[in-house]
Amino acid sequence: MMWLFWLVLVTGLATPASALELDAARLVDLTHSFDADTIYWPTAKPFLLEPVAHGVTAGGWWYAANNFCAAEHGGTHLDAPIHFAEGRWTADQVPLDRLVGPALVVDL
Image (cartoon, rainbow, N blue to C red; front, side):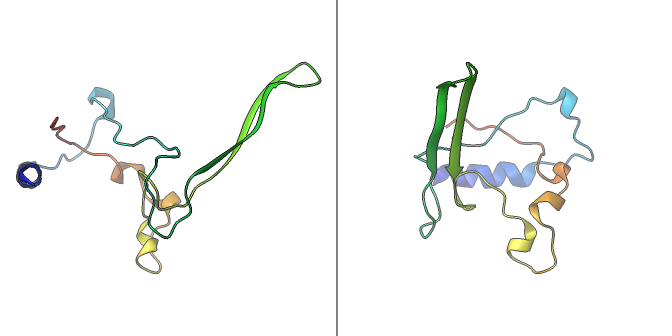
């Protein structure tokens, strides 16, 4: 739990940037893999990947396709403001600049 103390301390000391210049930034992808090991909300159905085709078709073309199904509350995801409050932004309405920002990477 000591790591949580340091994370809160460092986060509280960070000063917000007025504008984030992504061209000059080092981008860190915080997403986790999306597969059969993805953690979901306890009442949600698990990730499902169903192969449809993987090979050469009768016409001689290569074709690879899958069907997948996943609950919205699994793995790395965004809960749009409307999820908790009527009349708020849906996921497609959230400005992208609200989803990125300065960060400190702590390697424990």
